[in-house]
Image 1 (cartoon, helix red, strand yellow):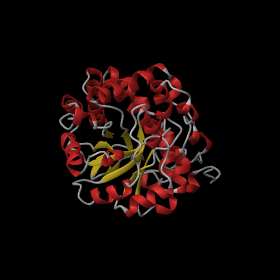
Image 2: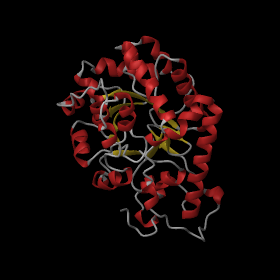
Image 3: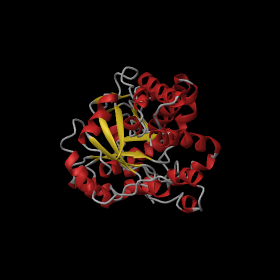
Image 4: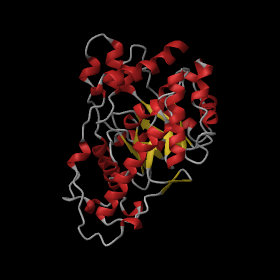
Length: 343
């Protein structure tokens, strides 16, 4: 089992490298037009894109979303390069599923990143379905401890597990398990989809369980259904569901009634600083991206830093062209859309 879990992570990366169509490029954010200000009445230098997240300051609201980790030189290199880049640029970082370190102890090194990123938020990660497979508070706390994390992702991936040849599909009763776990955990718990979006019903269950942070992780970006299709090699079920789910802008729109009760992270199909600005307007406090950083992370931290700095320039420039000097002024400001229409 340990080899299977570790090898699967490497297979995922190879599939992404070989099949560009795993990034579905839904471009759902392109349907939203921002209101340009020819007289912004601010200087570009006036723009402050920094925010606070999990008690720490970010240079702008970017989260390097969960990708990988495991007992292999490539996986170790990717995570370390991402951590070094996150620290250098002042952005948050989440790691991939840490389940592998419980069956493959050598994988722990790929998650021990705090010395490389001492000042930025780091997010640990366990699959929620593992709570039905023997995991509990002890395993979750161990995942947090290895990373010295500021929060724990419980990722929700029923579609991916349904397509995976070795998938765990026992999702019944998870809300109750989460309700037991949340108040005992030493750090905030974040419920996260992996590319199909969170619905209002999901958030209702999470709130009832004591969860206050949610990563909507909608469709439009990386399709784990398509990735698992390449590994399954039995029928086209993974292709049939490759675009399944709620696009991120729609998910954020549908969750608007829960603003004030919950903090929403926006991810899924975000590919630029302009997309990030739109996500914040729609109610995302922090914006997650993964795909744009994978190949640079195989190269060097400097390569990742270049991508992050480019995205930050886009974000700051968009704020300037809207006449906005700080991120708080973007939040839930529908009038900043050209038509005011989010559909």
